[in-house]
Image (cartoon, rainbow, N blue to C red; front, side, top):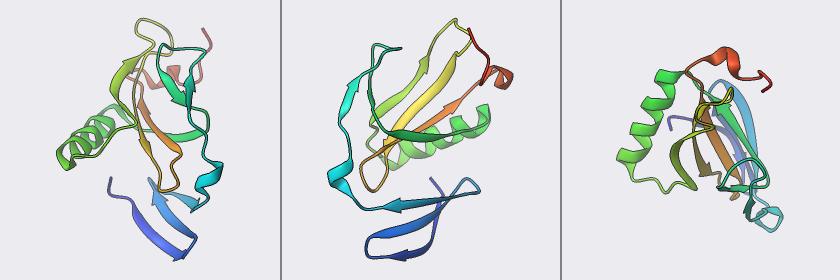
Length: 115
């Protein structure tokens, strides 16, 4: 993904996550399984975080990940088609097994817009 590792120890590391510090603690026993989503037909990780990328950045990252042969937790897809929250989304796992969502809005002003 192009993220770089900063300081680290045997049980944690800091990552430059698109200009934000992300600290990953290795505690796999706390990872939750995928569960049925209340807002989609997909099974989503209970605990996840993510980054909102520009339309172009999302497509570039997707191509980079596909070329690298990465295993997606949830394949790149369009979510909420035709709704206010229409977005592109893909999920990966972080080093501890939690979900990381990367999303993009063709209309970024709709990111926090209610239905």
